[in-house]
Amino acid sequence: DSILVQSRLPDEIVVVDEGSRGPAIRRVTLERARTVYIRHEASGLSAARNAGIRAARGQLLVFTLDSASHHPLWLERLTGRLGDSATLASAGLVLPFEIETEAQYLFERVWTYNRGYRTREFAGAFLSEAGHRAAPVWEIGSGVSMAFHRRAFQELGGFDERLDAGTTENSGEAELWYRLL
Image 1 (cartoon, rainbow, N blue to C red):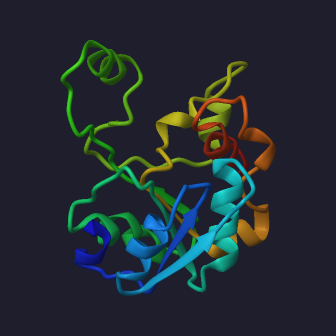
Image 2: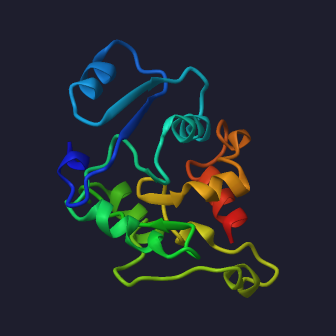
């Protein structure tokens, strides 16, 4: 519902249902305007994202998760820089819903998705600055708030589906950030 009250309304919303039980997701999705429902039997987040890419008609592809709630300016701000022909991707600020448990506190302190409020630009130099270490591409952004020009996927391919089962939650997006850079 937070996507349907954005200052910049989406042309369409593709909901990829990856293995839910029962009709609830399909029913809730189809009750909303601008939505397309896809039942996806293959497992894994990268496979589901690739199914969404194939189903979407637009040139700007935005990704989020069903557990997220978005500020009304989210879509406008997330896609605003994609009008620049040199910009292939954008990632937005991700804040926690709550910090009530010790685990939530530790996550936010050590491995937060909140990278601050200042705009940062990433280019190929980000990789070389890391030297002999892996560049910390997780600092670019999280799959809960990221957008791409369709041509990024046309040029580079989709999310690597081999990086789903048994890997960290964001390995598919991290690998894509490497390829983009």
